[in-house]
Figure 1 (cartoon, helix red, strand yellow):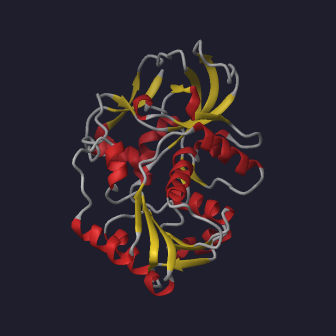
Figure 2: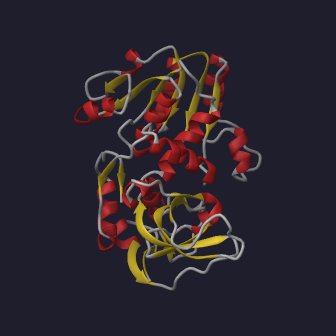
Length: 323
C-alpha cells in the first residue's frame, strides 16, 4: 500500500515521502480501515521537524497522521460491536500513528461509527480537534453562563471549542484575524475580537475560563483577565503536575512564574494532552446529528499531494481543517 512517511527529521520537503509499504497487521481488538480521508494537524509537522522527538520518539520511517475516516475491511477476533463494511472515524493512538495511508490498523474502542449524512472528509476533520476541545473544557468544568475566551477561533480546535462551549450555555469571546471575523461569529461566538484591530485584554475581562490554544505569553496573560478563582486550560503551554505524571515526567514542578500567577489569582491551571476516546466520539456524532456541531473544512487534497497539503498548513491561517 502507499503511505506518506516521515523518512527523516527536518523540513517537510526533505522529511516526508510517499512510500510503498505493507498493510498494517491487526491484533484481536483492532480493526483494519480502508482510508477514505485523513485529517492533518499541527502536531504532524512538529513531528517531522523533530520538535517532539523527546516526547514522541519515532522509529523512522514512520507513517504520518492521526485522524482518519474510512470503511472497515477486516477486524480482530475480539471485536464484537463493529462489522466489516461499517463506516467509522477516529483519532488513532500514538502507537498506531499513520492515517495518511491507504489502510490503517486501529483499536476498535477509540473509533465511532460515522454519522449518516456526514462525508468522510467531514468526519476525518473532527477527531483530534474535537477531542482536544472537549477534554480541555471538561477538565475545568465549563458550565452554563461561564464567560470564556477561546484563542484562535478560526483554527480546528477553536472552531469546535466555540460550538461546544455554546452547547454548554457559555458566553464566548474568541480571537481571530480580520478576514475570518464574520464566519467565526456565525459559529456562535458572542464576541469576536479582531486581533489585527483590537486589544483582546481590554475587551475580555473578569472571565471564568480562558482556553489557551497558543501558549507562550498568551498563557501568562490569561491570568490577567480571569476573575479571582478563575480557570486557565491550555493545550500549548507546560503541563500541570497531574498531567506531567500521566506523561511519565518524574519530579516535575510548575515553573515559578506560572505557579506565582496561579497563587495570586487562586486560579486553577490545567494542561490537556489529548487521548483517543471512542465514547467522546460517540458524543460528537450525536452533536453532529442534532446540528449542534458542524465541521468546517478549508481545503481537501489528493493523497498524492500530501506533502503540498502540509506545506499549506504551515504559513497560512487556514479556516478549519486540512485533509
